[in-house]
Length: 238
Image (cartoon, rainbow, N blue to C red; front, side, top):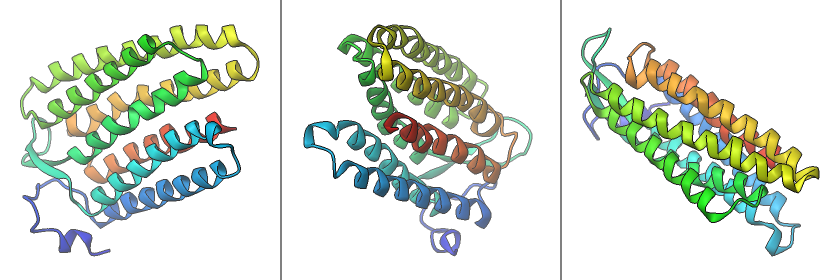
């Protein structure tokens, strides 16, 4: 894997950045997301056209994630940001990751809330709050001073509202439907909320606090993204 050498001159490079190990991991996750996209698409083919909505939403999420991980594995879609804590210098921040989340989070939330037949107000509220969380996370990651934690606080507050919409409004609606709809919603919703709860921790240890190396960041976010998209899709479509 020579991606780091090939793309070294494309953009400014940080002093704290992924190594070839991190690049390899990003390409591995890219392959997983690509394979998941293909499988979900193949599973949709026997279905009538009007029954393919969930497959298309989930395949869209994994495909966008595949593109993002290819970008990060190539060491593109990143910018150096001066660190606040611990190691001195600049840290690599992948803004490509946040663009991916901005696109895929609504697809995941929409696929989940449609199971509960949630009203438009609930769906719009959850997606809007998720967008606020992601934008605040990106701004916080790009801010080199202590003020980044203010944006982190705003983002976590918005994320808690997403959880409220999913675990209160959505759960209540799914329970009213009962049967398989209720079981599917509770399983998929629990996975999504638990995994998304770990993202602020990953952010605090990587872009936020500069505690872990970017290679370790790749592992942390990579595992979370696989569970939040691939495992979530398996549960939702089962």
